[in-house]
Amino acid sequence: MGKPPNLYAFEGADDLASNLRAYVIDAQNSAVDRHGVFRVAVSGGSLPKILAKALLEVKDDRKVNFDKWEVFFADERAVPLDHEDSNYRLVKEEILDKIPAELGKPTVYPIDVKYLDDIQEMADQYEQTLVGVFAARDSVKLPMFDLLLLGCGPDGHTCSLFPGSPLLRETDAWVLPISDSPKPPPKRITLSLPVASHGIKIAFVATGAGKKDVMKQIFDTEEGRQLPCGLINTYAQDRVSWFVDFPAIEGVSFPSRRGSL
Ligand SMILES: O=C(O)[C@H](O)[C@@H](O)[C@H](O)[C@H](O)COP(=O)(O)O
Image (cartoon, rainbow, N blue to C red):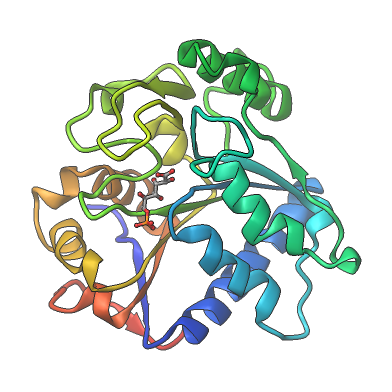
């Protein structure tokens, strides 16, 4: 038995956002001290809006140093970048377009839309992007993000890794195509489970009563530990922190720290 993940629960969105902010800025500062940049992978879904609140709305005296950020997509839908299903578009509209000039500009790595009709090629190209940034594949086994910011679906999926998917068994590729995602749209690319579990820090954000059944499964049952989010908890242990609100953990027995980090 390793060290369990951290589960932080907050009464409201403001509290969650200010604690998420503190956590992200700590991760940013240690990454910048370590290697001069902050490499982050983000998901779609409800996460970008909550992250925007944490990074851009909460006021305190600590600085989000966007100049040092390199932003990647933990998963992305195979659609044009201005399409309403695009995670890039979501992150751009919620966060990138709203960053005030004095906080600097992140470097962003979207998918290459040349390959919309060939998602295997799109996944391979995105993997090559990671290779270019994180070092050659033969010199590092897996890319190590400083922080992965992930969501959790009501079925326990994360990134575009869905329960029972053969993609969960992939041990070699860093980025995988999926053509039959149960959550629309069907065609996507996603980080593989080993990459998603390998971050220096991994944060899940899950809010609302719609998540309470899956949270109970993931934290309180053996079956739930086999779901994609549960597998990341098992592999990454206390490198994982969950930021949730009270409705999302109603009935969960696993101990949570309430109110602050
Ligand atoms: O592109 C996607 O579909 C997302 O990356 C996906 O993995 C998301 O994070 C979860 O479905 C949770 O979404 P919610 O936070 O909206 O429930």
